[in-house]
Image 1 (tube, rainbow, N blue to C red):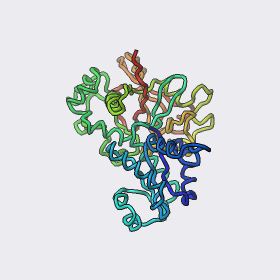
Image 2 (image 1 turned 90 degrees about the horizontal axis):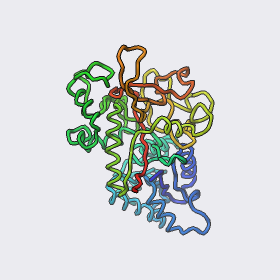
Image 3 (image 1 turned 120 degrees about the horizontal axis):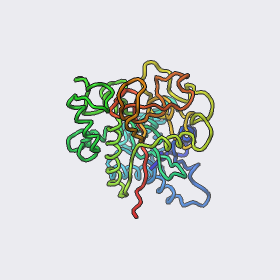
Image 4 (image 1 turned 60 degrees about the horizontal axis):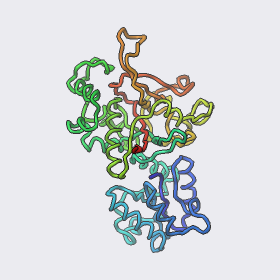
Length: 384
């Protein structure tokens, strides 16, 4: 599933059309009648397909909406999905309407948190994009290499499901963590030294039941990228999500971290360009960087910096773990040898001079930091 279905009355196209245009500019897939219906199409068939294949239904509630056959039918379809899937599907937008109007026309909708269009188009778009960050099934296809990559970094809302499903419990460690991951994590919990740690041992005040900054209000908005996760935590999340999606979608699905080659292909493809957006120097409309406070932004806030493939936030904001795990890399600043993993893309702390090209660095895979997160890649396992 990808994108959103715009459910609305025809009288409200003065707001809905700019909303659809802005969402598309931000790289979000949109089912909107003026874009999605062609002469001769079956209205019922096309609309039912759009309702089924969209991640969310954005329902623009207005005085024109209630009592109209098509909007009411679409709303019923979205509500049925919500009941059947047992997860949020309907995103209410209040357009020139009051609580009393909604209560009188459709009481269940009054209980859902919505956003009023009086806050402005950008506020509505930001709220929708933030909510899209709650879903693990927003991927874009990378042609020629036959995989799909996350349109955004994994967010706190997505990662919460891994925690709530027991990702850090003894059962979760056994089911979803690799042998090496369990070894490293046991040493971390017991505050022992390990060659995969950056520090000598975990400080007593650092948590191990969830990401390092999970309870810090600077980093725990649901639409922010999850940070403070080691390479092994990212690997375990991928293993958990593979099992979850394979079970719920009745397909054999493999989720993993992207290799550097795959990640860079999502960023620039085969073009000889320096950045996802081209060769122009980074600025505050293209990426989040140069922020000494180091607070990552909610995903999708820099639509002008989107890559050719539709991926957001590939430069700045948070570093992203890559799949590569390099053993016995010699350090120029340390006397020993150690294993490292790659991180890509730079972060919010980086200055303009640090972003002369897409950054790449190395960190020990047990390292946890406030500006290191990850993006995921999906491939269908093909049975022989």
